[in-house]
Image (cartoon, rainbow, N blue to C red):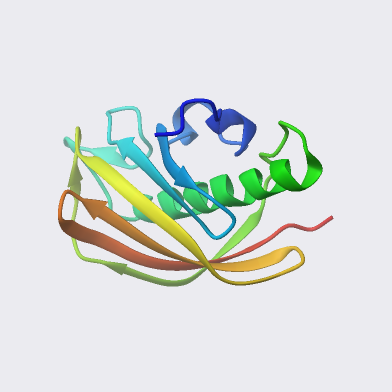
Length: 141
């Protein structure tokens, strides 16, 4: 865990849309986060959440990596700007995710150039791979 990093300083998400609870690891190439599904999450119905939420976890974890890189580059505590995200591929290995499940997400840069990057994301619940998601992110200046 990285206790001295504020998630809010790295990504713009707040309230119900801030799903990531813990930053496990972050460097210039990847970030790893943890989140526990709760009743307040979007898409929760009948005690479980749709695996579509895994896409958002990959995007928020990618945002942590990008925000951290921006803080290092600019020597400041500000990051957390919004990005436009496109889904290149999403493979779900679960039909639903029960409330209270802990999800670990790794988002790793596969390619980047200026304000564009492609991330490969893996979501795990325990030893089970729940999702494999590739996203592209772009920030217009």
